[in-house]
Length: 250
Ligand SMILES: [Fe+2]
Ligand SMILES: [Fe+2]
Image 1 (spheres, rainbow, N blue to C red):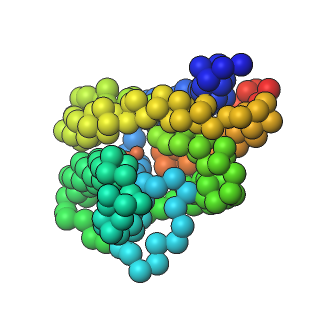
Image 2: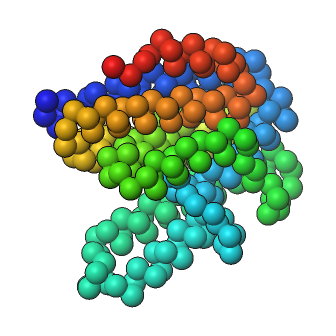
């Protein structure tokens, strides 16, 4: 199999779960979410944008993961034109600036719903997101370049939630959220394809591909749990387990 074949196989593993994230969003809208539903979702969404690195470690000593990422980036300047490639440095700066903008646009929507300024206590990580990060971190820190590479493909769930929420309309909150989601969607929509290309490059053998598919499957299922929890469980854990069983890794 060639690179494009690996890429297609990896995307095929994740696709049913990206679709499930879109379905979770549809069910959330269909049940006419309350103010509390929106607040829970937005608190968790703001937290995720403030902590955007895949499988980040402890952020002790930093205000949030984004602060920690920018501190690393600032340190990279010490190696500029020596050990640090300037395009790589620019890439990190660019991506983390986008993440800061995602935080900014969602924080503004949350302030609108709350009717007050945010405090440092408003962003909130929910339990399934904690599990998701721990799972990703184990893969990122496994020392296996294949598992590390495939984790990039677990960012954003194929952008399906952003895409669906960008279609919202019909009220001041819906319109504001749709605008914020459009910003995020435009930034993120090509990421899964790029991440899949990068992951396919890391594949050196059928065993590599098999290991990557297994890790991608595990994390993609956990992403659906994370998303469903944020949106008040419109898809139950039992249904998510059934979905995972219906789409096994081959
Ligand atoms: Fe992102
Ligand atoms: Fe983001």
